[in-house]
Image (cartoon, rainbow, N blue to C red; front, side, top):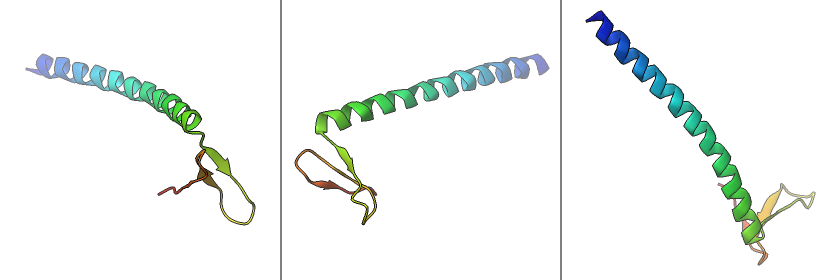
Length: 66
């Protein structure tokens, strides 16, 4: 019975480690997708000095951050 729980614990631990690295890898995908989207939509960061920084798209529409 003790061996059974040890094997189950090792399998769960291994799957958790694999899941950790897969999620870590997905964060890099989010960065590349965001970079691609910003480039395609012509989004740029505006800093006019008087107010806080904000984003505008290529049509000049202000993008609000929530």
